[in-house]
Length: 193
Image (spheres, rainbow, N blue to C red):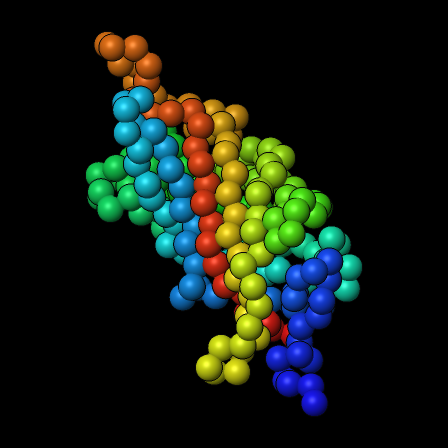
């Protein structure tokens, strides 16, 4: 006898993955975070509280695609003054450029549940290619009857390549804010169709 979860999953390359369909990022179960070095000696973590994504799982999983939108003004590092500075024209200029956008261009299988998601990231008016290291975390059904899958992803970008060049030189050498920013994403996606 086939269970109802079997009807929406399939085996692929040793993994149990979702059948083809459209999924949306579950806003209650996501984190779109980042890490920057501060004064060359410590790390500051933050996140964007408002983000949406549509994930299209294809019949051939390596033809799947992702489109994501992040609200720039939703940046949150738990420090109001710093967040206001990050929203300002010296950084994200969220009044003029209200969203950050990501659109995938390809998927490659790496090893087991690990994949590389290539795409284009747009911050302000600059679009650059990026590659996200993705881990497929599993597939299941929620107690509310929703078909879901989990994932995590990370990459590192050079913020200056996106026009985010504000900085302060330190007397001891180095700069106040690192050029390299690590992006960390955790999420669940819920079947839409």
